Amino acid sequence: MPMSIFSDDRMHKLLFMHIRHAFKTGLAAAVAFGVSTLIGSHFSVWAVISTLIVMQGISVADSVQASFYRFTVMSLGALVGMILLILSPAGQLFLLAEVFAICVLGAYLGRYGNNFTMATTAVCIVLLVGQYVPRTLAEQLWFGVTLSVEVLIGVSSAIIVTALIWPVRLGDTLRTDITAQLEKCALLLDTVVQAFLDHQRHVPCSQLAGLGLQIRSNRERMTKVRKLEAHIYHYEHKGLAIQVDMVENCVEKMRALIDALNEYDERGYDPLTAPELVSLADMMMRALRCLGSRDVRALAPEVARGLTMAVDAMDAGLEQRHQELGKLELQHILQLHTFYLVLRHLSENLLTALYQMQSLGESKIFPKPG
Image (cartoon, rainbow, N blue to C red; front, side, top):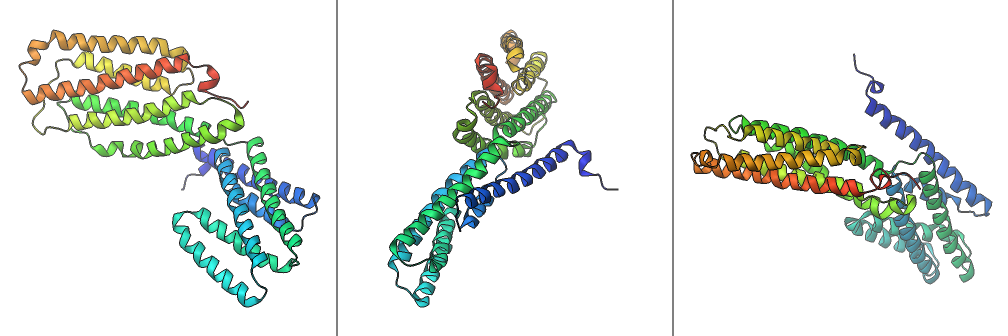
């Protein structure tokens, strides 16, 4: 018997989010139509269509970005259409030629982005609708201004509803994903270290594929949060930026660890510093989980001290066993030192991130709308 989607908490939340977004879309369209009607406009359809286009993005950042492009592109398209409407001679034949040329141009320019297609669509709409407007210069100018105002009403309604009613902040979504990614990094680190201790058993690089794909998405969403959402809710995102950088840094170091682990195909050896290596890996996993925790400021000092002690213990262990390490084959020595150096660099990055998070205020790590 198939499992209900409501048995999965994540699917339940996703379904509820889409239901709320559907309600918000209807409300924003109603607001746009109501405002357009109140000012006595006869082109309220433009306000509603603009609202629906902007509301295609669920998060606040996506809606703000779409509204900017929508208003800019449609206004420019309306301006060009108005100029053509004024300058072009009357007659269905000329109108047919203009529509044909503009549609061909829009289809070709669509290869460079949807904004070009949207702009040429606006030009066509202005030309077609403008045929029912008196061809006096004043009437046509007023027609172009009215369309731009309608677009402004539509995007404004979408932004207001998106930002004030059940807002889906991209920063909150990204923070949840980053916490899960840091947990994956901790589990993968444990897998790699255990494989190294188990006579350098190989680990497939494919285990990094999922995290590698998420790095680019993290960067793109972080840029939207910094450039768009921060101007609406007036809070810092330094803590989130540190977490995003840490995930990227961790994936880079994990790739280097796996490469060092899979470098040789010969029978492995027993690392002489196994106890220290296990302790170091445990503290690094704890640090990764700490960075994704809401209690990071409270936990950071203790975790940083423990990680520093683990690094020092590993250094001392290598120094004490220097002569014993010299009995290993050269490639094994190089592999051991490479593996440890990557772990040490990752530890230093974790310590830096912990100190940075500790120095931030609570509102900067887990911001609330201002």
